[in-house]
Length: 372
Image (cartoon, rainbow, N blue to C red; front, side):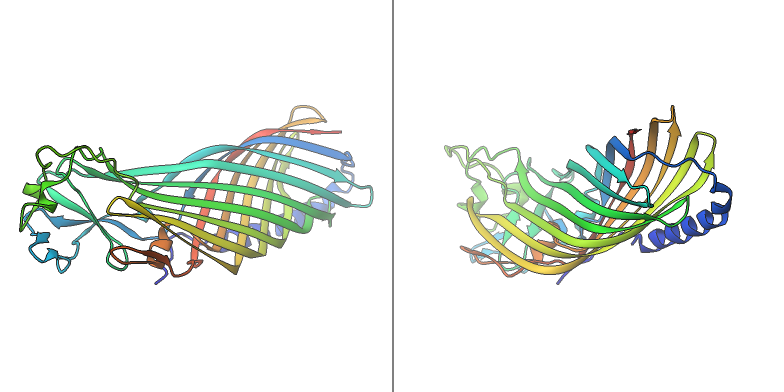
């Protein structure tokens, strides 16, 4: 069953920006009739710092009390399901990551213009670790089907890492409807990649005694078997998702306040996109990696808004500082794909791709633009 992340949809914010920008600009456009004609070309180079909220709400770590028999003469005691959730994917808050933002605009004499812009942010990562607990708890991750992941030894921790990357390229045709208001429409491509990986650290120092000789076994029996050799643990769960979005968008840009060389500009965009979404997973069963993958085509929505403060150093050079917000709805995120995996003691199968998630990027941008 799909789980949607608990993020605040910025649709209202974007709509408010459009209404506010258009109303303010219309009211003040009469005083700008003698404004100086803008130059033909504008080139901008900026740095962006974006963070992300909205990673799904998939349980990743749950506790089984250390005095519960987990291994019994008949095998795994799977009737003792994990108790309280100790870590969920919505706790993997991804901090700010930097990236470049480039743009070029050509303005014609008749009020029509064209713009091309690109930005990219990668390395949006976060890691959370649980365990070992005091008093001892047995960390267990329950995925659909018969897959369980346990601590082999009492000293181990369970670590989950999330990584994301976002790329955007757009081309728009713009029309100045007043000295302060510009409407535009265009094409846009976005690529959203998301990865989730679960590992046990440190590596096993030998074969755990409780799996072979101790029956029934609790956490107190989680110690290496005498004479066993160290065993390297591969990541027990890895999911990579990719969203390739191609679509059309409309938007508005308006100067909402201006004094001398200082101005504040509001921006709002909205678009509908065709999304080719994919997921590829590697699930470790008995320390053997089992691959699975799936793909689907769906429709997604993207909304964007922002404010930009601009200070003109000269008639040609200006410094910019902005706040940006970008909302993607109907995309595949890595945590929500766990529910799309079917496992047996020996096989792993991807039953589909969950594209019911939303995610929100927000942060700052700063840089310089040159007009000529």
